[in-house]
Structures are given as structure tokens and as C-alpha cells.
Amino acid sequence: MSIGFFTDLLSWLLLVAGGFFFLVGAIGLNRMPDVFTRMHAISVGDTLGAGLLVAGMALQAGPTLVTVKLLLILLVIWFTGPVATHALARAALHDKLYPLVANRSGKLVEGDPDKVAPKGSSKPVKGRAKP
Amino acid sequence: MMFVAAILAVLAALVLTVARALKGPTVFDRLLAANSVGTAAILLLALFGFMTGRPEFLDIGLLYALLNVIGTLAVLKFFRYGSLGHGGEEEAET
Image 1 (cartoon, chains in turn brown, cyan):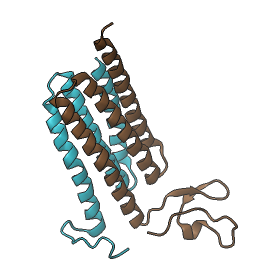
Image 2: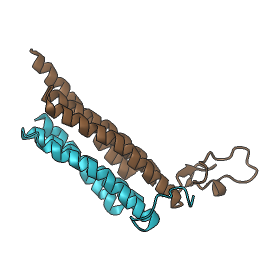
Image 3: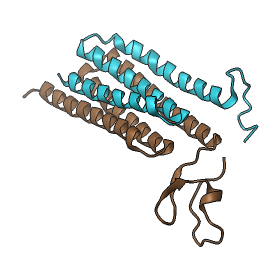
Image 4: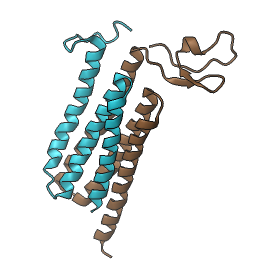
């Protein structure tokens, strides 16, 4: 029971958790109904999975140059992932692709705010402003 | 051994992501999947380097990370403006 044992154990846990979240994100990418929900699933899963995997690998590497490179990779992923997702969402909205929302009867319809909220309804569907 | 488990999980995620890239109904689905394939490739490279005890793979992973976002943004710009040489009038037509 040395300190190395606990480092290995923690590294195992982090790597398995990272792989799990990465996999969950990829499953969400296949199961979700429209492009915005898919974006949500995969970007969250990617960010968390990459963080956990890099943490697990950094524990194995110890305080060396390898850890610095790993953290640099993580930093790049964490900064560029949201930027790419944001640009993608903006481009999709600009291309007149609206998120799916549930209407009164609970069916999923494309959430163009002009079409979904009927005139005179007391509670209009909360949409986003037009791009 | 622990890296093999993580590699298998990332590989399975990669297969699912490629499936979405192939069947995605809109171009944005495909781009999203392509971006995610890039992230999975980076992590796969890092994990593979650790598994074989050759951390030089991390440099390649870093390069992939930098190229990944540029590729995504370039394709997005191409689909929005129809060319890559367009000037920066981002808000002009909204």
C-alpha cells in the first residue's frame, strides 16, 4: 500500500469516468432529435470527458514536461470547443434552422417563433429572438 | 491496461460520431460530428502515446487540436459566404 497504489487507483477512476462521459456524449449525438440538442450533448460530453481523461493521464505522468503538454492540449480543447460550437449554432440559426420546441399538445415542432406562438395565446412559446 | 479501457471507450465514441457524420441530415450535423471526431482523435493519440510509453505523440495531438478548430471555422465560413476570401463584415447581413 504505497502512494503509487492510490495514484494508480485514482488514475483508473478518472480514465474510466472520462471514457464513460465521452461515450455518453457520442450516444447523445446519435439519439437527440435536432442539431441544437445534438450540439448540447456532444459538446458537454467532449469537454468533461477530455478533462477527466487528461487528468488521469497527468496523474500517470507525474510533474514532468509531459504533464505540461497535456494541460496545453486540454486548454486548447476547452477554449476552442465552445467557440466552434457557438459558431456552429449561429451559422445554423442564420441558415433558418430553428430549434425544436414542444407546442401546446406536446408535439415537437420547429420553433420558429412566428409560427409556433399563436396570436392571442396567453403564454407564448418562449423562443429566441430572430437572428 | 487502464489506457486500453479508455482507448476502447474513445474508439466506440469515435465510431458513433462517424455514424452521425455519415447520416447527418444537415451540413451542421456533419460539421459537429467532424469537430468531435477531431477531439476524439486528439485524445486517442494521447492515450496511445501513454499506452506505448512514447509521450512524443502528445505533440501530434497538440497540432491536431490547433488544426481542428481552424478547419471547423473555415468550413462554416465557406458555407455562410460561399468563399473563404470574404472580408470581415460579420453583422452586415443579419
